[in-house]
Image 1: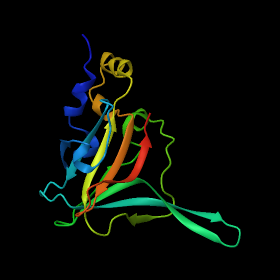
Image 2: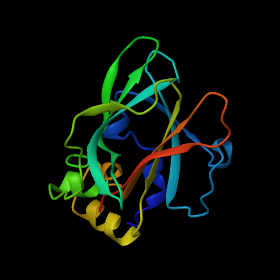
Image 3: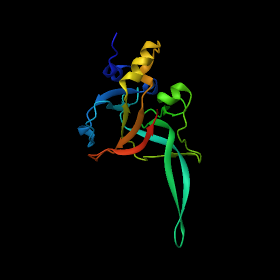
Image 4: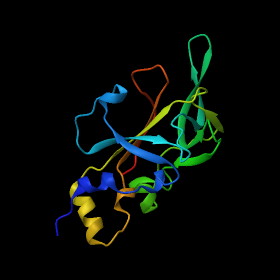
Length: 177
């Protein structure tokens, strides 16, 4: 039996099980992607609210300059989303447990070390981008009897679209395989 990789985008994902999610076009959020192995989902709370806050973990880095040092913040996973209406907060993505490497138990992705920080003080629309590349790999998972193949995504991206904006802003991007 031939495996249809395109069917994965219609299956329920573990990372989105505590949220509502609907497929949307890249153009609708001011982004471009012509590669059909990537897809974008709009994420909202189960209460129906689509304006959420992103809470990331962070790592602080110090860059030494010629005359003074500058501290920068790198936004990393684990990532939680919090509803501005019902105040419900849930884990969205942790590379240690989500995606191809997380599901396989061999994730080496960076995670934050210096606490949590709200990425967007003003609640915004949230978009998740996932990809499934290498159809033969997914076919092998199907042959091996893996039931949740859709949770073995290759990449994860998170975007916010502030209320009056026409182009989404990237929060994080992870290679998961």
